[in-house]
Image (cartoon, rainbow, N blue to C red; front, side, top):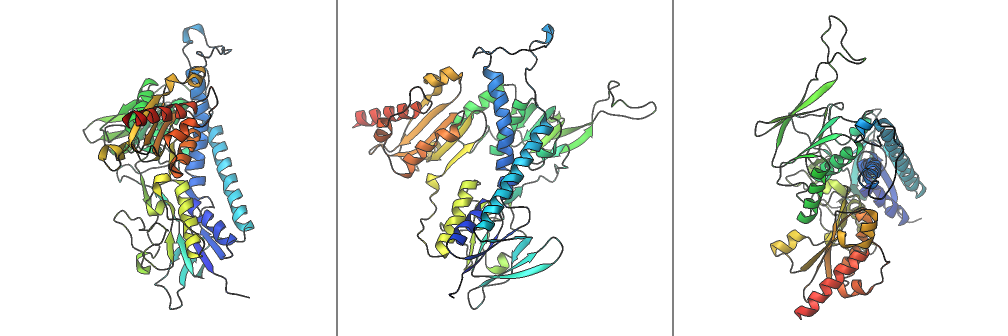
Amino acid sequence: MGYVTRIVIIGGGPGGYEAALVAAQLGAEVTVVDCDGLGGASVLTDCVPSKTLIATAEVMTTFDSSYEELGIIVADDTPPLEQAARVVGVDLGKVNRRVKRLALAQSHDITASVTRAGARVMRGRGRLKGQQSIDGSRRVVVEAADGTSETLTADAVLIATGAQPREIPDALPDGERILNWTQVYDLDELPEELIVVGSGVTGAEFAGAYQALGSKVTLVSSRDRVLPGEDPDAAAVLEDVFRRRGMNVLARSRAVSAKRVPGPFTTEGPSSPKAGEEGRVGDEVEVALADGRVITGSHCLMAVGAIPNTVDMGLEESGVKLKESGHIWTDKVSRTSAPGVYAAGDVTGIFALASVAAMQGRIAMYHFLGDAVAPLNLKTVSSNVFTDPEIATVGYSQADVDSGRIDARAVKLPLLRNPRAKMLGIRDGFVKLFCRPGTGIVVGGVVVAPRASELIHPISIAVDNNLTVEQIANAFTVYPSLSGSIAEVARQLHTRKTNAE
């Protein structure tokens, strides 16, 4: 019997479990060390839960914003004086129970797939121990929850430990009123007034979702606009939608602290104080801004970024180089600076996307086990912001064009001109394509629309395969369809290219 390559993977998120599947299929002896459950934050506390919550919010938004225009009549017993009252509501406790149930089911499915492939799953925390041995192997110490430990020997180690919510010292989450994004699924009642601190992807997604569910939302942004890292035209559309739907968006407003304070006194209802007692109805949260303003809400969600899980893992002692941010340095085939040690996912700080983590993990295993592998190409990565409307992007961006990093032409077509959008009552959104001026090769695109995450795929194929706007324009599309706008933009770019020649 020949020698079997030993692989130890620390972390069971997309980077870890996808790597485990590849390594097991290629005949390696694989051990996955994980402390929370396979799927990681992506499945248990981030992507799957948040998008499940957003799915409920999306249904409510679609209904609230278009049922009258589409001619739908709702049987409603709201008294005449309150006809403006909301037609539908939400049971947040029931929503969150569904969120947790689906996340747990997905984690179990992943565990079953990994074990069925032949990998071993260990529950515990893993850390590297020392430099590479003379024979080229690495050691990983696994500490189980019961206090026992086991040392594993590996020919290669993959670090895929992810990241955790960043905290502000004067705004530490308590899990009740001041929350991070992993804690919102413990709420049984909808926040009456929610303050969201942070206007990046996580902050924008939760702000939009809770507003749709019925909360009064204030979004605190330290930048000039929401989603500062996204296409500026797309961000402008979303911010306009947010404000139009009643959200209070505070731009150029940096939060410095958040604290709980007594709520307003009332003498009505079952929670009224008894005689002789000092009472209050619940708590409130005060968020102080750098300019001296103070805003008040019933809850506060802190969405101010993430920090990599690299502390107390023996990385630097084992020769693994860290960036100033604490992320692990890697090359395009997921190697770290330490021989035999690879890294994948949020812990590398490349792109905080499950798809990128999974690709990094697969590339690492292909590379170490000698299979054919292509280096990671970030210019073919598609991503999506799950707001309403969604914002999907791929390839080179408007910022790349504006800064001169690439010479490209761009055309933007509003969805208002699309017949299918008119039928569906869609008012907001657009399709934008970028192509090279000489060849017409598609190098990037932006879609702002309901289900933009689905509409971006043909553009991703075009970017990945160096297709031209002429090829996109000549492909048949269904009439009427939202995807017809992609072909229409391509036709306009092709016409401009031809005229320029």
